[in-house]
Length: 433
Image (cartoon, rainbow, N blue to C red; front, side, top):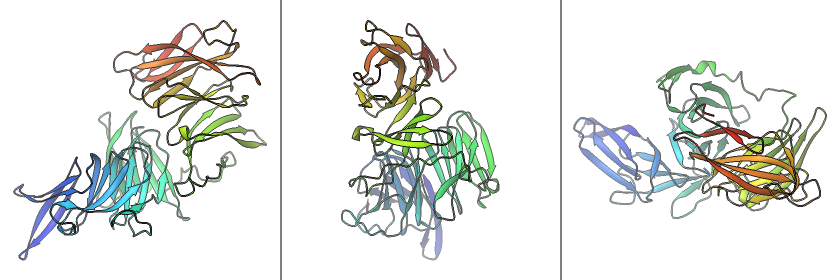
């Protein structure tokens, strides 16, 4: 991050440039000579993936540092850091993200910070003095708004006069506006490329936003067109609200619960995993809607990727520790945690759409309906093929057996798969089969 700063001295004004460094340090240099006129280091050491400055002069210069510890530290860089020497005092600790911070920006009035993260969210923070404090002089701030919508990691954000713009790994930019009731919503999505919109910027009048894609493309978007006409929040009888379970006592003080992942089970049912570790089984029809709490587990908190069988008998949820939770609609014990299949978080799951009936002599070890489950972790060059055998209702819990580990060509990433019990076909992100 770089930022212009004025230095008033003996009736003259010099222009300085503030630079953020990866180890939570800042340098302020003379723009003409390149000489360092001020150096500061935050009192809390951390590696940064993102940073932003606010302030017009060296005395009021502050920095928002997006750390690899899932927090944003707002600390004073300038001469008025109040701690002596070159150690910058942390004034605000913004806590709530569930992944490393990739982008952070101040609003023009310095009262709001926007941050985006590996957890696929945009979060907005108020810097007005809150009531709760933690530590000596450090104010801990919870997010004012947590916004979901991107289908990949979010790289950058812009805080403009009447909206916030984000860019993502999913190849899109999104425009977010505050509604009359005070809530925020996405009013526009601009598709640019298959993967990664790395950079965004606005013109001084904030009428245009330019974006740079991972495919080398450059696009300009008119903000006047993002008026909200394409928002899905318009009244639509086909939209059904999913009621989430009330928070327990330990969750009541934390962020509001939200849907983290879902999987369709046929045309009229679904499984939903929430951020607080609840799993709901939903039944949806033309004249009915029912939600049943299947299970609550701490192992499901904070991260979940889901997949369902088209035949409706099985759903799988990938967890952060590399294991997989199985959800069986007819089972009295709907949650079965499989021993870890991976060393890292399960990023992609596919259940082959065709279920086959097997005997007790099959590789899965019990007579039942058998499904083929394919899983992969992020950026992995292999896919784990597991067979899941679901017994009839009322009988013992499902059996599972690892069938094979399928190596992919170098640089390939798992996209989809199918199987017929004896062989498997795997498709990659680059169109390989």
